[in-house]
Image 1 (cartoon, rainbow, N blue to C red):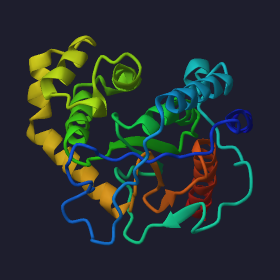
Image 2 (cartoon, one colour):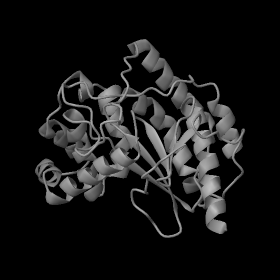
Image 3 (cartoon, one colour):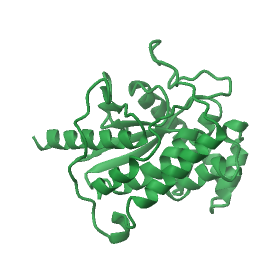
Image 4 (tube, rainbow, N blue to C red):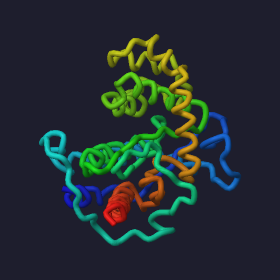
Length: 275
């Protein structure tokens, strides 16, 4: 399955765009970020190019396989990664102070640091979603929102509020669509308020007042601080960023290559665990 998925993805644009906050706030991952950490790189693709990449991503994801493990009821099994072994410094970097975001016994963690307002993350989602569904059962995939200030932080709080209220999984892609496809929300085109976002979740069965209360609660505050610290020690320079087991930051040559490199690093961690 993974071989078919990888082959279906090679036609994608070989560009892993980085997003950054554009609301005037400092683009930092955490208050204690070292001064050597770079701010996320600026990329402003033309609307037609972004739309083309998203369409290509969606088509490739659809071609990756008609049935996912969830649909067949079978647990995904590990398969050999495709392509050459990744090279340190070119395909990935070893994190000096890295650690998993949410360690789980016996699991290899894969984290995507993302932003709902990021066009590149929106284009990556149709690929990473099916890839996530096909990961072996010993891999734990987690989304970690990037907290670059302003609207990014507002959406990061919304992510955790939705997660705490049990609706994140079913609304994740719908929120991307509301921002980047349906223009229901403004994303980086304007500053969405917490009330705007709560109204979106109200359409998906969550009481708006309850959602706002959760966004402003103690639990979400702690979760967003944890996300900032993870992004800082993961040395990210933009989004989307893939981090494997808190040890490796993937630096693929494009969306498809990023997932290919991640497959190799997952296999490496599995072999290390077996030994």
